[in-house]
Amino acid sequence: MDIDWSDPDPSISKLAWIVQLPRQLDFPGDHWPAQFHYAGPFHDDKGRAETPFPWERLTGEPLIVECAGD
Image (cartoon, rainbow, N blue to C red; front, side, top):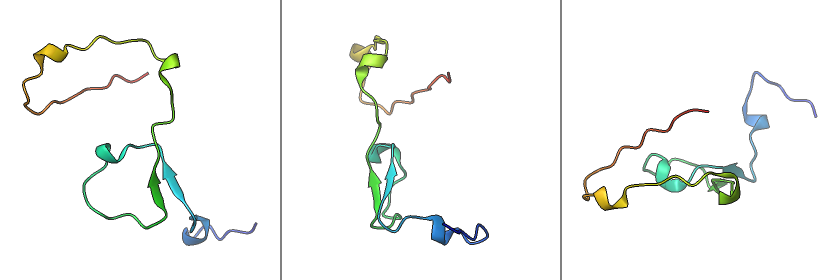
């Protein structure tokens, strides 16, 4: 396959753009083409350690979550 890398359009699929982002974490709006599909995250809970969360402290106010890097 010969791709002209100065023009990105030929390397973008016209069939499907599949992302591991849940729709709820994307910016609001309808700015993606029809072939864009939210499908993530791709994981199961078997590989994750259980993390306690203080659900009783939620008040209904906005919640900001900071994620630590690996």
